[in-house]
Amino acid sequence: MSEVLSRREVLQGLVWLIGAAGTLKAAPDPQGIGVTPMMVPLSPSDPAAVAVGYHEDAKTVDSKEFPTYQPGQTCTNCVQAHGEDGHWLYCNLFRGKLVAADGWCKVWARKA
Ligand code: SF4
Image 1 (cartoon, rainbow, N blue to C red):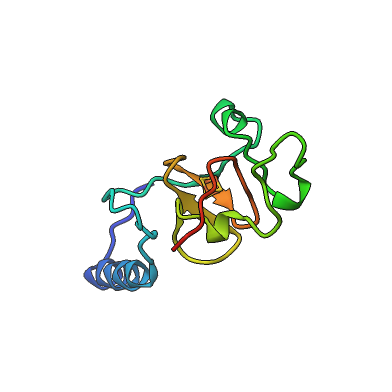
Image 2 (spheres, rainbow, N blue to C red):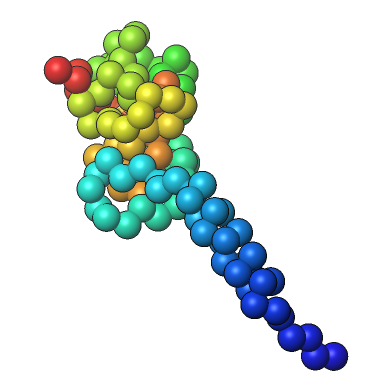
C-alpha cells in the first residue's frame, strides 16, 4: 500500500511538531554540566551512599551509630545540596543522582 502525502498534510505535520517542541522544557542543569541525563534518586543501599551513611529520611538516623547527627540537619540545609526546593535535590557528592530533601549523611555541613 502506498500513500502520497499532500503538501498540506506535510505542512500540518511540521506545524504540529514545531508547536510540540515549543512546549518542551529543558531539564534543570544547576551543576552546569551542559547535558542533563535523566536523574534518578540515590538508593540508600548504593555503596557510595552506604559509605557516608546516607538516609532518605533524617528522622530515621540512629544518633548512636552517627553521633554527629543533630535533629534539624537535612539535605535541604546542607552546603553540598543545590537545586530547586522540593522532594529531591542535587548533591555535589552524588553527581547524576538526586538526594531526598529530608535526607542526611555524615558529610552534612550547614549551608551558609
Ligand atoms: Fe545530603 Fe549533604 Fe549528605 Fe549530600 S552531603 S547527601 S546534601 S547531607
